[in-house]
Length: 566
Image 1 (cartoon, rainbow, N blue to C red):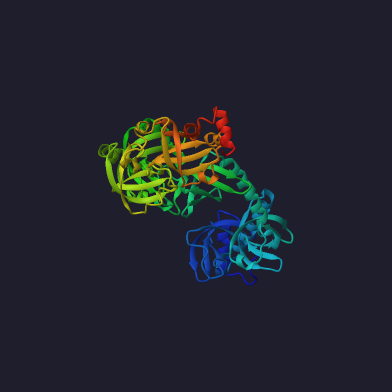
Image 2 (cartoon, rainbow, N blue to C red):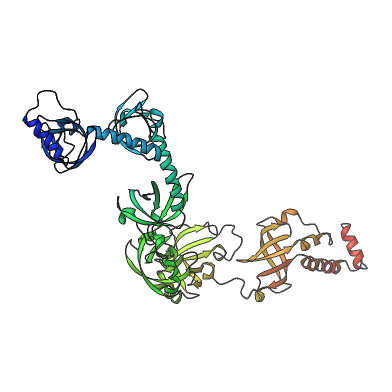
């Protein structure tokens, strides 16, 4: 042990005696353990197990800001530097021990490839200087996996890195945070692929909440928990059941390692309520539920959490002129419905609402029996007929064929106007399809009824030509009754050599013809000209013979004379 030169005094001799009497022996450079027993302005007194106390200078127990790094009662390691025989104190160093231990840790970290923690204290031209107990250098290229644009943001940060090079003699230490991050990423990805398998249960923390779902932190990545996978029931927004920072147990629905996309499910950890729905909901049963959604096409009713039924808009009201579904039911209202059908595989239940209400068409069928005379207002005119409202909510159709008996009017609807009041006869009522058939022409007798009594076969009738077609000529012999002169009857004129001018068959002309056949059931009347021509021919011959019977010997001669104009 080195002591100061000079004359030994009584105190020095006593100190040496104390040292000799010490239980422990030591030498300069030893590292020993001690306990801080006092902290003064100039340093700290340490009990190192000797009869003489040790002392650490104040600059070794405060940080750069002057804050104490130790406290009374703390156990620390110190290096014996010297003995102050004058003051009976052993000079100690804490910093040298820390430096020795730091280099030991560096060597061990390099050998075992374990990371070290440190604080970035400054930047250099080529990288960062990191305090890991001693100064170490981290090259720019070894800071991060991604390219680093600026070093300033790292100053003051605590980092973890691997020792990739250590020269003991020169005490040069090279660190790499990049290699540590790559290693951790590889380990993490390996773990992810093992943990994030479809069907696995896992815990996560809600990071952010959106309108369509929530992002949950799982194994270092954020997975999407879609709103549709949160609960078997219905919610309007994820915030109804989740909040940021909430811990959840989830099920892995899908994981794509390449893209890092992770789909999570919460409701999948519970039994699908549709599994037991077949036992609980039967066709024809009356059920109560809550209106949870109203759309243009119908109303969704929650029968139990996770099981909805749909009331189609056509099953909301018996009124054919349906309004928007929100005019019949309100959101969140509790209603009774009847089950129309159940499809467990498709997870669909069809519900009826109007089926629990009285069908007004039951009364309509009784009130408007066939043959009843009604009056109403024309609500619309279409190519196929007139729609007539006979009372509020009850509309009937007058088909174009039931407007008039006569066929001579090309557009029988042209004489009617919207909002016009008319009378009609009820032809039929279809309460199931809510259809009321009306007729206007039925207000007057059917002209075809008993027509066979008015027009018998062989009768000569006069009529007006209503149509001229390739196969013949249509003739109206009375109002609402048309007959057909077939082309074969018209062409017969050549056989008799009787000239008929073409304009004879123009529409609107009057014509005389004979009744060939009457089919009252099928409303067909066959007319002809041949028989009429023969009758006229007989009359001509009869009259001619009466005046010229002495000069004509036979019929052939008579016709010959007629053809010669005599």
